[in-house]
Amino acid sequence: MNFHVLTLFPELINTVMNTSITGRALEKGVIGLECVDIRDYSHSKTRRVDDYPYGGGAGMVMQAQPVVEACNDLKKRVGNAPVIYLTPQGRVFDQKMARRLAQYDDLIFLCGHYEGIDERALELVVDEQISIGDYVLTGGELPAAIVMDCISRLVPGVLGNDTSADEESFHDGLLEYPQYTRPEEFMGLRVPDVLLSGHHGNVDKWRRQKSIERTLYVRPDLLENAVLNEKDREYLKEIGG
Ligand code: ADE
Image (cartoon, rainbow, N blue to C red):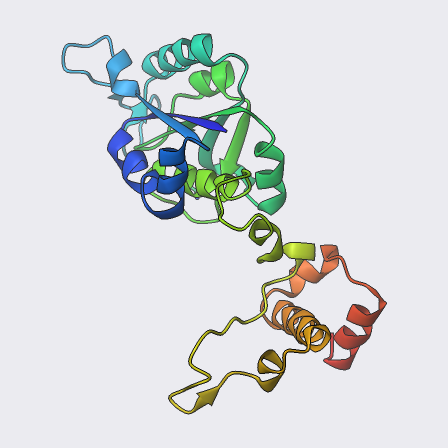
C-alpha cells in the first residue's frame, strides 16, 4: 500500500505516520508514504494558495488551481488511484470502508485547510469524500492520518501478529472484550478467574459475552449489523437486549 497525501502541512503527516507501528511499517517498506506540498504549485511569488470566498463570509478558501495542478501531477506518476477528500461533508469512515480501501495499491488523500477548497477543484479531481465523525477540525491532515493508520493495520506485515487485525474491536461488528495482563491483582482488583483457568472454551465464551454486553450498553446501534449466532442471541436476551 502506497499513501500519497496532498497537503499544506507535510510535516504534520510525516510526524504522525513515522511514529510507532506505522513508522516501523514505513521503515520496513510494507507501506509507503509520499507528501506533496500543495504550496509548491502556487503561481504567486508569495506562494499563496488561498483567497476570500465569493459571496462573503468568514475565513479563506483554498484556490482550485494549485490543488488541481498538484493532484494532476501526482496522478501522472501514480496512475489511477482514487482521490479521497477529507471533509465533515463526507461519508462517515468505518471499518468496512477501511477494508475496501485497503484493497488498493495506491491511495491519494487531499487535505483541505481554512474554510475548505474551491468546489470546482473537488468536482475536477475528487472521487470520494470521507469524514471521520460529526465534528469539525482545523484541517484534513489528522483525519487523513487516522484513515491511513486504520488502513495500515489491515495491510499484511504491518502488525506483528497476522491474526490481531481481525480479532480486535468490530470483529463480527461487536466491541472488543476487556483485556488484562500481569499482575493478577492490582490495587485490590483481580483479573477475572476464568482468564486464569486455562480453559480455552470458557475463556472464549466469557470474551464473547463481554463483547455483547459492552456493545449493548455502549453502542446498541452496532447490534443491528452484528454477526450473532443462536447462543449470542440467547445471551443478549438474558441481559436485556
Ligand atoms: N476536516 C475537518 N473536520 C473533518 C472531519 N470531521 N472529518 C474529515 N475531515 C475533516
